[in-house]
Image (cartoon, rainbow, N blue to C red; front, side, top):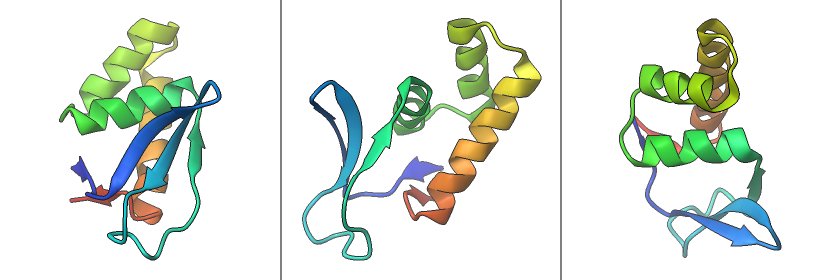
Length: 88
């Protein structure tokens, strides 16, 4: 799994946002604001980490259970897939 080409992560007024780059993603107009966990997951996917590695990082960062972290990662990645941000 990897992030589809044509999306950029930017910091705007203290917020992390995802925006389309150029005309590669004409189906998506606007931007997505990420919270800290969303940013962590996005950046982890961008660096090639697996779902399990991302969940472990969330457990370490936030002190939640592994089961909850796995659920959160799967939920976020599911939304990323549905919205067209991921290439398989």
